[in-house]
Image (cartoon, rainbow, N blue to C red; front, top):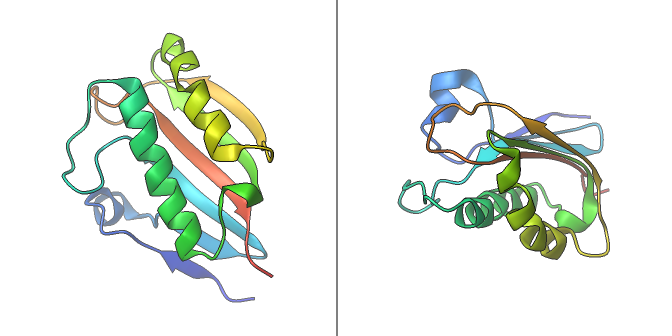
Length: 127
């Protein structure tokens, strides 16, 4: 099976050397996405707004791969402050709905201090 790489034009993709998502062997691997506004690049100060932007970026990558949140198998949440996780739960519940993936939350620093959440997803690719 061929490997397909999906890029979005993020300035970090060429700087760091990664693709937003990679489709291979029946899976879509979405790289860690953060909460910068996809149109302006501005990072909101509120974690819920960042979470909303992050989910929109992931949804766009999944759609480009022919998949969606209903096909999510695994999700990793990375937050510098674990207290910021619970305010995001309603958005996460809405995104995954009746198809919750296996999940892990990790407390760790992100690439810039303004970022409050990073999410990576592995989903099934279209057959």
